[in-house]
Image 1 (cartoon, rainbow, N blue to C red):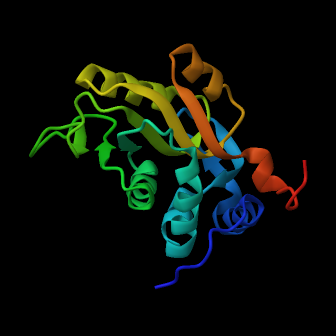
Image 2 (image 1 turned 120 degrees about the vertical axis):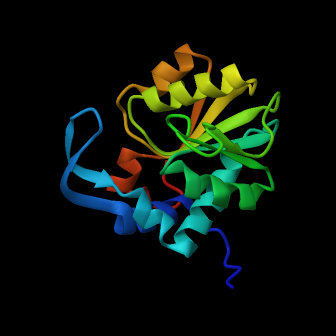
Length: 185
């Protein structure tokens, strides 16, 4: 197993762009279409890239965080890797409660009263993160922060801020299109 040093943000952006940025037609859940998209499964399928992404994202986790919450499906591998990188326990959020078995919407560590940070792959409008923040809050887990690998400038940050959730993004769409050289301002 490798114990390589954490790459710079520019190096990581380049690797993420090469591995997970796909130029092909893609339809979002709301029906909108994209000409290119970020394939979180390619990120999750590359163990070194997933480890390096989580290690880099660990610096974005607020100091007072007590729990990490990954949103199905893209946020689950990220939250597992981020949990390993930070030592914080994790929960996993379904969009809807499971229809059989436990019938839970939230699985994993005990969460009641623990300051929870949401984790997802891409944030666009922020609607999914806001829904999950509400779900956690109703269940007794205070949520004031969310993390993502990639932020698309489609209003998500503003929507979340209106509901007292601060978004911390590792990269923006522009970072993947043309990563800044090391030391650039």
